[in-house]
Amino acid sequence: MANNDKSKINLAVIFGGRSSEHEVSLASAKSVLKALSGDKYNTIPVAITKKGNWLIGAKGGEYLRLHAKSAGKENAISLESSQSLVTSKNNDEKNLSGFMEGEISGGIDLVLPILHGAYGEDGRIQGMLDMLGIPYVFSGVLAHALAMNKPKAKINVKNAGVTVAAERLLYDGENYDAEKIISELSLPLVIKPAELGSSVGIAIAKDKKSLEKGIADAFRYGRTVMLEKYIAGREFTVAVMGTDTPEALPVIEIIPKISDFYDYKAKYEEGGSEHVCPADIPDNIRAKMQAYAVASFKAIGCRDLARADFIWSGEDDVIYFIELNTIPGMTATSLAPEAARAAGLDFTAFLDKLIAGAIIQ
Image 1: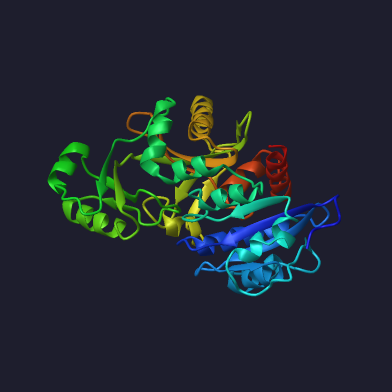
Image 2: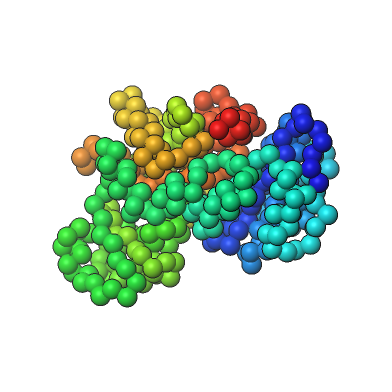
């Protein structure tokens, strides 16, 4: 049903999805729903199950409560007290037809898609929302699709004057010569599925055997694999907020604790990494990295918020672009909210600013 209280924003928060990052999305949505003020928003939880079914309203909240990993009662979501909910008469587990019904879509002012990876961060959900005429937070179809395709994103970023690592692409079914690749790029090499997030499927090859194994493993996640020259150095990330005049937030250094690089385990396991914010680096490096982040943001066509990852090489003192995340992690302790906190915005204020910027657009 539509919201009759015009002083509040009807905000649909979509989470879950069919990607390998389903659980990451649930963790982000749980934190977001807890932080959003019931005085400002009527929130509509919209869960997408791993099978692609949609649960809207109270059923969406129930799905999140049952499936999101809990870090204690203090993180529990109260569907009764912490926020007002716009609920649907269609509360069964169905496909997206319930979302498209007039009683639901007609009452939505804005969608906050907290969907990581395929189907959410690759432009598909944004295309659906565009067709429905429903405005949403974060970038549009093209920017999401471009950022998700790492090789194509690197082309745009490089054309904007940002340094990128040398690479070689392999396609499913292609016969490749491992020795020739090693000769061209030299070991070690970083092996990545070309279209995937959260460092899923990434490996570092230090010899021919691990290169061939890493390539075979990466092809399990897609039809294109990117082999990238390994850059030894310190890892950093820079979030960028805004649209017409995007601004870089404080630089964060990422120090992996349980892996050789910032892989899936280092990102999501407790104690997997240490974040230093603001990063302890020279001012000229900080300024250049922030400028690179804004340039990357613009080159890919982002809006509202994105996060660019870099490596500062200790060998040649060069800053290398790694990738750009168009829907970064959104727990209270995720990197973009952490940078915002260093800039003086707590998690709720950060979300308010993000939503307000999208409404203006």
